[in-house]
Length: 553
Ligand code: N01
Image (cartoon, rainbow, N blue to C red):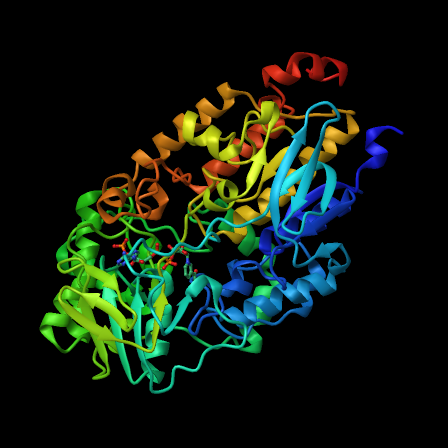
């Protein structure tokens, strides 16, 4: 029997979040038998595992949703400008039902290994329980920020109280009423959970190492008129977001923060601060992401806001970032974050000046002081972009494991979609894809994959693979893109995850493409217009021959 008849599916997609659902839908449309395998017991990806109190989108609902399905657009109703995690999870489950995706989603199926069979040209996917499935194509939809990390603090396993990570939150929730709680981490997750914990906990101890520049979101209800406007204009909204460097539907500023008068600068900062969220970062001035001087002006404005809100001057000072400027870390948005530090049950501790010494059986030892706690919440983030891919064994040609290839050659991809040495393997939100509101590159990526795999099928191409040369070209562009921003200067100072700086020992490479989401889409379009030449040019597959036999230029 030919091997193709012994395969379980045409494509196996790992992960049932935004990416997996979009890919399954789009590959079904071209007749590919596609199966999602999902490690957890639910649909929703990031939104299924990060069920901590306060979790919600940092992007507004109208560009944090797919535009491709008219049924979903017409029938789904968002209720909040920044939907909470439960609402986003409900949206994704609604999509799964409305597009009839569930029958091709296998839950509780954690992948341990995926191995390329070079002789027969298929992927063998092996699960934790020892079972396996074979498919021609393997697609990672495991998420860019899914591999949660705990810090290397001595004694972490000795704590007798309860321990939680924001990215592995118990499904039934946790009752913190009256408890003594410690939180480690003040990134986007910490910033969301801290105000909620403060309302419940008897005492809340926040261990802050690097403060953030938090912009208030100013959340709002979505009324029927607003929802209808969005329904009527979804295509235009999505189109504008896909042309925006950060994948958001926002206006383009015209002035430089450095060149306008002080009064004008203050007026603009104030008005965008009021509008809230990513509007401040994106709509104030042209150069907050490119000029260190402009970024410092925004930093000082936010510091003045912190001092205005937080009553205790010492606490306010500790909350003010000083070692890096605005945009040095991914800008987090808040919901009453700074006000929380005016509560008498909330205590801010400086884990930079005095690091956490260890975790004891009773709590957190900070300097010489032991804080006795009932629970510790780790809001300590992720092994971003590469973590999910290097945590399992993805074994390509010649037995090479993906994590070893990247450790040896450096982080290399062909526009974040494929990797040399790993034939018939695609990634959604792979490393070196845009630093952006992620729903936009997820949808566009799924549609790109649909057209690419249709092309492959129609021409009878058995195997695709990019060359090392294609990866070097994209790596150079990734570096160029990053170096045109302040992130390349400020990110390393801030230990930002986008440069691998949040993990001791991780190589400092640009994990994301910062040259702009719209520029990235141009590269994807160009690849397509060249009949995917760079995706069919690896030595191993003799790209020349592949193209010739498929009647291509
Ligand atoms: O993780 P982070 P996150 N001692 O890496 C601290 C997305 N996201 O989960 O900065 C003390 O940002 C660490 O301190 P430092 C979003 O893209 C999106 O919050 O290394 N502290 C830092 O404060 C975001 O950027 C949304 O000095 C320690 C924190 O832990 C990304 O996920 C919501 C420590 C980790 O912050 C990651 O955000 C949430 C130690 N030993 C997240 N080790 C939405 O869009 C680590 N820390 C809604």
